[in-house]
Length: 486
Image (tube, rainbow, N blue to C red; front, side, top):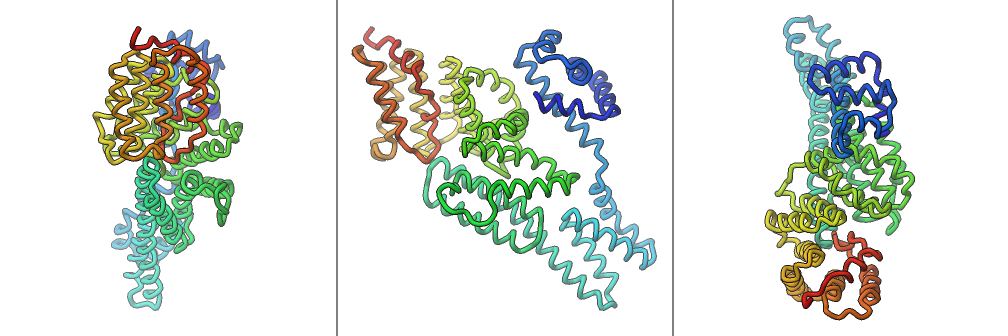
């Protein structure tokens, strides 16, 4: 909320008036009231909610929509020299066919300089193609031919870098769900290929694309704390990228990638447990979480933010709030069933939100929907984990028939791989089996002892069972269950 308040306060008087009038004309009276309350009246959140007669969840949605509307307005009002340059390039034939050669050459040289400043390789090829034609009888023809060829190659390099990013994060989803060594080597090779492409040209755009991959790789594939990383530190990369964003602040791609690097900062500080620094960036990313998850999968494994968000809730003891937050979050997220790793993380996060609100039936529905909507056969360990979490829901609901059904299914699958591969799930099921057994003596003590063993297990792939908070309340809930025989 602090971010929205700061944005509203920093609006110019003309922008504020335009926005306020637009909201009133659009019949968005509540949004207009919120804008005015934040700008002029400086009311507290609770006071605004009371006056608007809205629930906390509805208020969260209202401020998110206002934030989006302000951003859209600022983009529309932005006087972009870049847009003006592109318009001139599009109308270049008007100059070439109607002006004298000297004027045409002067115009082309001016556009060349401006396009170089904005690193617009595709448009530069148009300029150099035209300069080649105008200099066909001049010694400069060879020079411009060389520049044309170089910028065609550079344009292809930028396209290649973007393709490498998409391939990397698609492969990362497979790696995260399998911990397969072949997938890991594939990620390392893609990073090396990206670095080789970035070395070909002195380009801020290639540096930014490389940084998207490099930061994530050094956090989640080859962590800096496991090997001596070469080159810049991650914090140096953040500083360099921010310098580029500030220099090219009118670049529309960089405008959107700013959120991406805020997300990387959240992940960086969370990884190294520097939580105070993490909080400085968390709210900004959290306010735009739906946008990040839906629209940034080509530049990162965006659903990773949900797991960091879950870890934060568990750390602060606010996990009961997840389900309420998810009502507005998932209202803006369309499921992508073709991206199985991303969809699975989203659905497990949603199910765990219900679990922590003790809405076990809703959690079971989400997990059953996940198992029926996508095939997890390619990711057998994840399928086992999902079924284990589902077994927990039926255990809490006292539906011991379905609990035994899923528990037995998991155990059959584990036997195919050997218990060493999924020992954490076996221990998880053992806890639930003891909870549902007829024996009552020393149940809490026995469960607590197995929990210690479970927590000592180390699993490298995505394992949602480790996101179950196994505290005194967890033990109490399990030991209070009625056994099947009662």
